[in-house]
Image 1 (cartoon, one colour):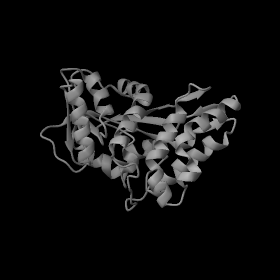
Image 2: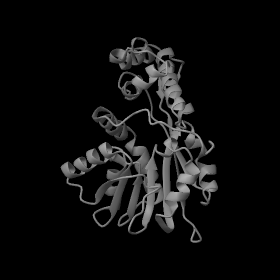
Image 3: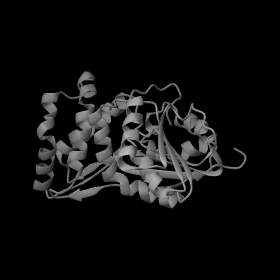
Image 4: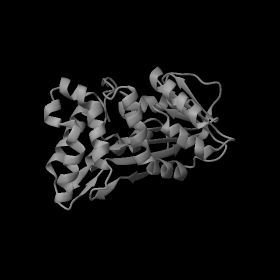
Length: 278
């Protein structure tokens, strides 16, 4: 686990292009998160807090699971993301979701939640243990804490595809250099314990595919496009070296020629219930 004084900078930003990318990525990995939430026990009638809601996809998923008798509050520190998510809720006609600006670890709410959820959010907090401790005051006794984080070591190509692997390295180096914890999924068990929760149940999911129809090439290329300004600033890779306009197709051609498969980062979910004494 990282030390509490570790500094983090969110390299992806909150541009309209990035918020749209988040939604496309969210759709690709939605089945993993849905299975996690269902297995953890997110169900009809619950009141759920979504930590770091971004463009709103996790909150909309939770809203579907809790139904019209439930309620979801999505919170994000970025006003741009909150406004975008509220506009999406309005256009979708989703009435059981509300998005608010702020860091839920520092905010106060008028009543407790039945569950607190988040996807790819603890990895950006300097101290995930302290963050969970602060969030726990918002959940009722026996309420659920559910987080899904990355295991980037899982992402790879078989057989080794040089451009695909180079693209993964660019992403890992940029996220790590800006303070993100790209292996936090594998640390969720001790993080939950250190925060005072019972040892969590866990599951891991990954996208795997071969052939030209695999969606991972576009997912990686779009992520690199969002990271590219920071990537260049940190001298990890130049725009000319990346060749973003053809990157996805070049990765696809390479893997197809090798008759290979590619695996996404692992999505590791952990869930536990708050003790009565907490």
